[in-house]
Amino acid sequence: MKQTLRRLMEKKTARLRACILLFFACLSVGLITSPPESVTPTESALAAKLLEGFTVAVDPGHGGYDGGARAHDSGLWEKDVTLTIALELEKVLINHGANVVLTRREDVCLCEGNTASRARKRQDLQERVNIAIAAEADVLISVHLNEYRSRSQSGPQIFYQRGGDAGRLLAGVLQQAMIRELKPKKERVAMAGDYYVLRSKLPSALVECGFLSNAEEEKLLLDADYQKKIAQAIAQGLCEYRELLQKTKQNGQ
Ligand SMILES: [Zn+2]
Image (tube, rainbow, N blue to C red; front, top):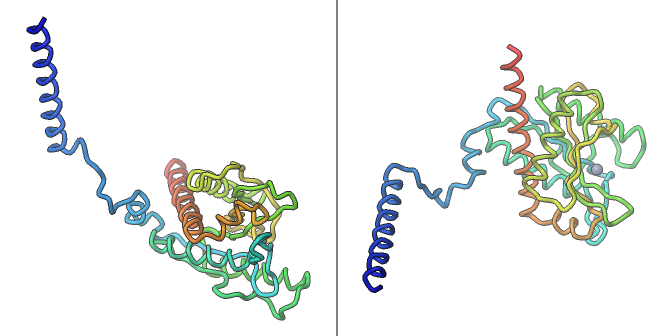
């Protein structure tokens, strides 16, 4: 009995020794590597400069007299949050190697005068599209925050112009990236929507980052870390979109 036990122990020790040896052997040939703590996947993606030579027009929705939606609890205006997110997005995109043009960098509307009118709103929106076209942007991303009378609605949602294949592809990829990176409770799908900024030939997407009318999501949307995550998600989506375009081009040739 004792002998059997000793043999068993010896076997176990031998097996353990073999495991340790195998582990160190693997380590030495690099089969087991722990990623250096300072390098996160995001940072390695940044290093890859996936958006080199790609021009992104970023449009912080609203501005000036046009505040957009108003956060239910904090009373903050959509125009201020879209600008913060857009400036964050600009930083991330530049780190990815992209050329970035913003339609506004301050709290202004892009029209003459500063009171609400239909004509002024149209002029403001047209000017945003003009800036993107003048920059020869590859894509136009208009950043917005949603609201709805029912406070239960939540989740990011991307819109594209019906009939535009590139815009639809862009919106679909962005929607997936937002779901993957932000893990919202409600997973929405990209939808066609008739928005003025989406009507040009430029592949465009309108990004509703979430609902300011939802108490829980309002807190997130006003949180600096979450705003950074939104920017990262959009940038990731743009990298994937560009990759898809390049693959399609290669296959077509
Ligand atoms: Zn808006």
